[in-house]
View 1 (spheres, rainbow, N blue to C red):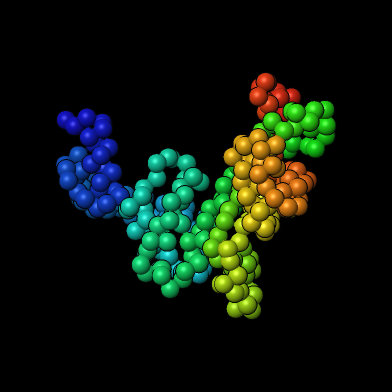
View 2 (cartoon, one colour):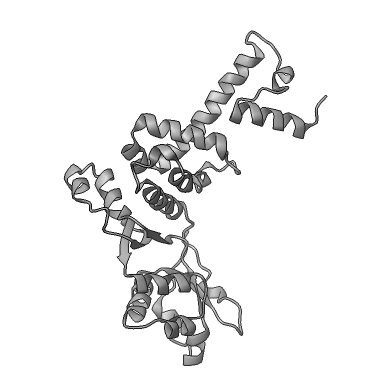
Length: 267
């Protein structure tokens, strides 16, 4: 008898890659041949994963067309099966897969569009959390403000795209052919803030200096160092935008832990 691990590996090869190996030997023949039974499971499992990708990459599917997209998702599933049973997390590598897919070379912006849709997926499924309010910083000294590190809100993502993926995304989802025809693919790169708000998903373009400041703050660099390393008014504009849009949920200082009273969640 095979071990459980050996059986799982055999089943994995058969379901994901179509390699039979010894899998058929472990299937009871009760009215349906083992090979046919495994084929049913293979089609079902691949179909479920392809559906998970289709639900995330809606605009990509529309741009590529149903047949092309179906083929691409099945190729991706065989190459990069899920590492978790939570399929909402499946698809992080799909944009890079599309970028290297020779058949997609005629749609140069599709990888950026997929990256945007993956960012949207992340913020859609992010946990709720109370945002950091400007008033929470009121009691800090200048020295504390210089050293504090801001904690990004889980419903916010930053994204750089070579192409105007935001304009394409809106045009495709709104089925606006005129807007799509008006998109200038040379209107890039674009630096985006992707955020889930009470109104839904909102996309905001930042200038490159603003995006650089936002990225540094999201990486947890000290506020003073970020502001000192930036030039011009964009740094302060970026900080003001991020705070007023409630893009952070907490902060920490070198001499103390993250404020426990700021660890609040919506109920």
